[in-house]
Image (tube, rainbow, N blue to C red; front, side, top):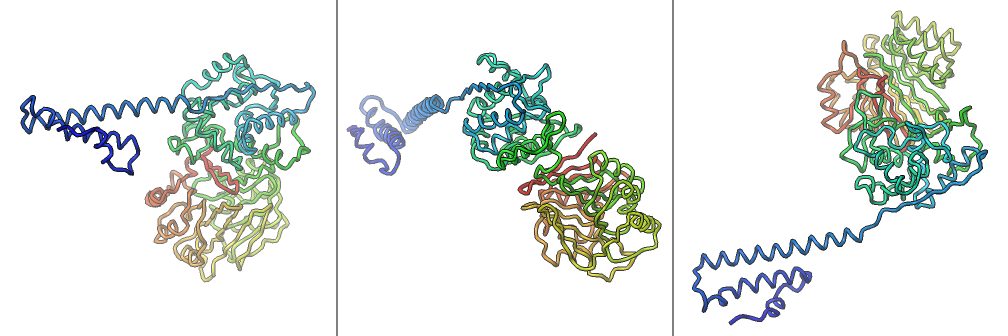
Length: 528
């Protein structure tokens, strides 16, 4: 006797969803009754019954697959539709550029983006123009930044096609922003991952960086002057270089500070460009390419601190870099120790700048490099401050902590006499360890210094007994190593760092620029 189908369904698991219960019931129905059905009609042996049951299973699975496929299509059909916005910005020709920028900013807010998200978008779109004027369109190469450096796919062609269909100028701010919103809202499967971030974030740094990586996709190779970014929502782009990312971030940070603070009175330069070189909220650390020698410039536009002076032959180039970047004054010059690869360039540097404070370790040496340093400091008219006890100072909210050695090292152990410098910019921490060797590293770690985002690896990346423990205790995300082809870093040190998940930068490959926002850092090798 064939059992009623509804009885089979009723006996299925009551906690299962309806569709699962239905499928299970149907399958059970077929398997339980197939033998009875054929019993009096066709004589089937066990093997044939099994084949029939398997055929029935295949039919059920096909039905399930078809139902899933059509339900997915239905879900996709009712998904969020891409949004086209038409921005009509009517402003008098003589309206100041900053007023025009504010109109663009307010239009993005009206489209639902957060203040930080709007500034991140503006920082990218305005990157290639000195006058972010929404009433001006770009030329053949584009006055605005959208897709100017994009090497992936046909992004610019899609922009042009979109603007033609919607009767917009592809080179205008209106057209580019409308296209950005269109792709963010679902038209592009990669860009749309940014939509929620740009609508909710309160961090313009992240907004600008992620827009550059995931929307612009202006990917470059390491042979170009580019920025390396470890992203958060685009893992397929990790480890790549992005053209102009730091410039885009700087602009976004500047817009955010200006719009949020309501300060519209800051001076602009003669071309109408916002001055992003000072007060942009970013602490920049520039590691000079000086072979196996140390020199680091830390500045945020309001102050400048130099740690070490590299070799004698590097002094002129360092002085020129300072001059080219408008730095004629140092708040602090910190000498980690008196080896020539840390003080050799001091004479040329001190001839080019004035200095408020010079910090030195507590020992002397009879080397010629030390004598020239002493003469240069005397000519500067500044009495050096000998650091015998831990000290700290603060510049524009950035805290510098100087840790001197406990003492007892001989002149021949000058590396262990290194001053160790910790720099804290809000949530970002950076550690500069001079040429500290085993004893000095052990002494420092005994103070339980905690973790750091950036580590200047001691002694040019030479392997020591304490290297592994240092990496384990400090857990850096980024490591800087000053080395050269003639005096290379030890391979084992680089391997230890990379195995721990640290991104390693070598000055032998070029100067390294690190930007700290207080909530994250990025580093990149600067290739001229």
